[in-house]
Length: 363
Image (cartoon, rainbow, N blue to C red):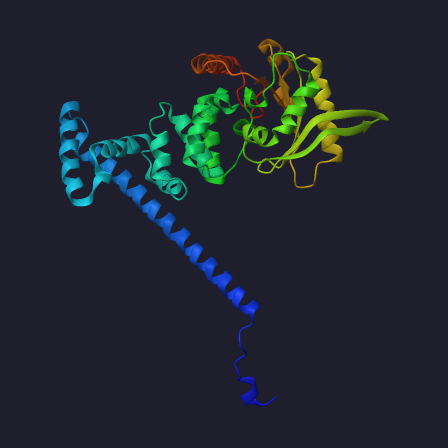
């Protein structure tokens, strides 16, 4: 082949044109996404800096009525030059933003994934640990603002095993989540689980409960939380020629663990512990992959007695016992019940001689 022949341009085929168009579309979308993230982060940091500046330079130590007057005057001037984004109400959001999140490094890291609307949703939560929990979980699981509000309304934080731990341990786990995206069972497991979407009446069998969960598997996965993948129903295991069946088997991607779920209609009974331990040891021996962590178990019951749970020390066996609710009580009654359980758990843990156990919460 001559040199002249080698320089002849080959016309693009339909396939080449399609590949070219696909690649250019990808470049455009990636650039748009990058620009949107950068703009969102910049605007979020602007709002935080405005809030911090007003608070530290003007309002710190001043009377409340004086501060209100200053913010209103500032707002009128800013609206004239920059529009309604700097209304009196929004400036107060910015003030609250800087108060709720005083560390600019944390704000910057979160702003890469959380919008201003996300931040406005969490800054008025009264508990700093609760604020940090929702902000970090929102970042990790990429929640929409609607999903974030739904999680808050469902009192997700109060239902996590983590919320019942001492404050110093909660801070440590949230710091690990912030720095290393390290998710623990305490952040994943809940109590109680809301199963009102199953539509079960007052009388039903365990098989009815299981069938309803399988019919509403998508909703059940949402209630379990991010990272759960369904593996099997009535997972058969054989021990000494005897057959046993695990009601539901899941895998959690972030925890890198198999999760066995046992469904019970009545209150928790001590014998359930040995049954679940058998399941977990069999799964650990026969199903666990080389890079996975040890399997964990969830026993879902209609009720439980706290002293029995404590004496059995289920957390040491990797077992979490939780109630499920097929009908939700009034919100205020539920809030009071969760608050009472949280205070009770923290009081019990504070009374223990050794509070270094980081295993799955067993209450």
